[in-house]
Image (cartoon, rainbow, N blue to C red; front, side, top):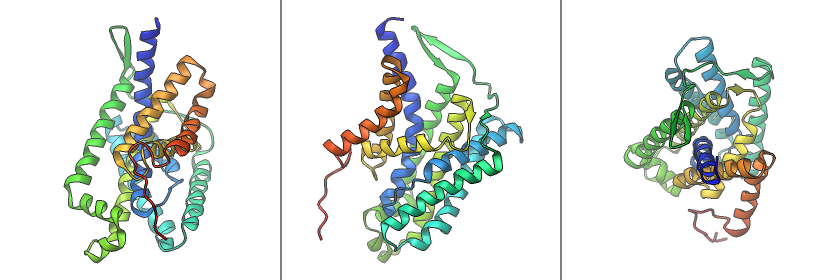
Length: 295
């Protein structure tokens, strides 16, 4: 394979991986946009969604798409439960308290997962997507096609919800100024709860897609993708939905190119090198605007 074909093939792989990062990063950026919380437990919500999809397919015998929907529904409920029990009581507490709580929730989900499903990695069941197309020398497999199509559908649906629905307008108002939105009659508690619901559902979809793509899941699988999705959100401009999508795609492509042309050993290092560069050069991210906070 010549350089051009290898480059394009890595781009295809990178967009596939970046689509998964984008789905997780959307949850980060939605939650931060409204309550200014970096929800470090979000990566473990993604892990929970992967396991729900795994058991839906392997135990309940559901096909992949009903299993994906079931995983999104159950994980959405988990996200709302976490918000109600862990974050709502600290709504007016200092941000450091929320951050420590998020880390605590992350550890709780990880070790609860190891207790209930054991630390042993599980092989994801066969989903009937083990086919591929060779187009002009470029290989696109069934898993990648599924990731592309589902990611596009979910992002289009999220865009519709945020831009066209009453809930979306309330979310945008709350993200701009929560206190003023409350004075205008918006139920901020409901808006925050639904934000966790939608973000968790997207993370669950990413978890199932990763299980299908890599064929293995484990209770600690959310740590590194969760951190990388945070990097993607920062890269695009945390709190900005299009930025999370673009940041995820860019991060996935850079990882694939580093792994393909340099060494797979450095793919994780590349993600955090990007984070350092963004914080040094443009802390607000690609789509963010620098704002001066008045004291």
